[in-house]
Image 1 (cartoon, helix red, strand yellow):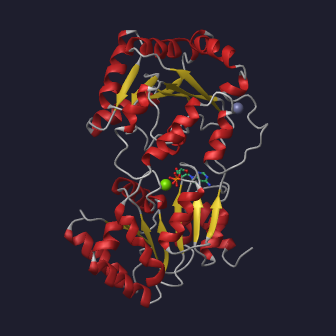
Image 2 (cartoon, rainbow, N blue to C red; image 1 turned 90 degrees about the vertical axis):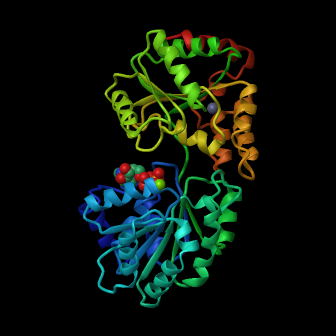
Image 3 (cartoon, rainbow, N blue to C red; image 1 turned 135 degrees about the vertical axis):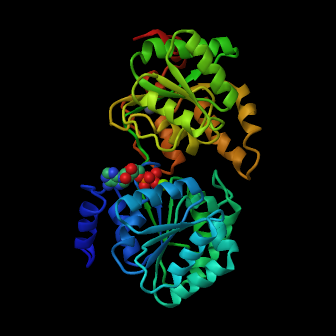
Length: 426
Ligand code: ADP
Ligand code: MG
Ligand code: ZN
């Protein structure tokens, strides 16, 4: 028990209207309230935001939240405002008056604003912002710095952002201000690199498990012809996943449109979702899927944010993801209700080249793709064990419970026959 424990519980119930913490949330909250630097590693959707939003309300002063995506920050500020938690946002595209208002808040000893969200380039490039933040610190009002998606610091992460490199100055500029980094990237390599870059070596690492015991993982051999692929998808939707909801991920807008059209021609109710659609059409597609008018959405990775459907029973990857982190996140949208769901990947060699031309932009990206390929090519080891290793965890050798194709069918020859059957049976 800590001096703040009663307050923490009160804020959880009364302001966030949440009944209980998820694993490791309270650990993260207590360590940052104790003033320690910490990295919080939890899968997407596990509830990392609460780990800095709640502490922000426990002590006086301002929490700075650094996040790479404006849309994510807007969502958070909106949902905090609904809860009557005063939060502000400042980006490079904010109107002048808003920017001025936020700059004032940093100087204003009487402000009631608790959280200020900023993009990393604000910290890196805005002298005025930094000057005011310094003032805030000098007045003893800089309570905490939260860095969301903190793996973006590291070139070894799957999502490197150059502006995140500048965040290394924070721990020197503001000694005694706890830094809380949050990410769903768990590899030791990236976590060490992040600590070095932020200058918080040896900080606490608070990690919750990535194990999703109710997800069944499977690889299917992907036919070389488009016709063959569509036929597999058709069978899966018509037989194995009849009446159930799911997502089919592919890696290009064109593929998502073509596949959706072909599946519709075969009498299936599917929607299409990608970044080139206007927000209205996207919302419509999402809603139709939610209401079960569409059995599946054929989507690019643009379909991800804001999915809160708990009974997603299947995620089919028509094309491999560009990294295991991405795969875990995309497939993890299945089975949020805790009931069995299936994550099926169609794999063929040609797709490696297709995906690799897309990921060349960042250092280490081929390494990440390699992790994905290793997962697909593996024919002997439990798929869940490979996932566990990737996230530096040990789920125990016997924990799979036949929830992957390898453990279900250790004999490779038999498994190949079963690939065919997988589409027909049920
Ligand atoms: P992450 O950043 O880890 O991907 P979020 O912070 O966006 O996840 O949280 C995902 C969802 O989980 C949000 O809708 C949030 O309100 C909800 N949530 C967080 N913590 C809890 C909890 N302890 N109990 C119930 N819901 C929670
Ligand atoms: Mg998050
Ligand atoms: Zn297994």
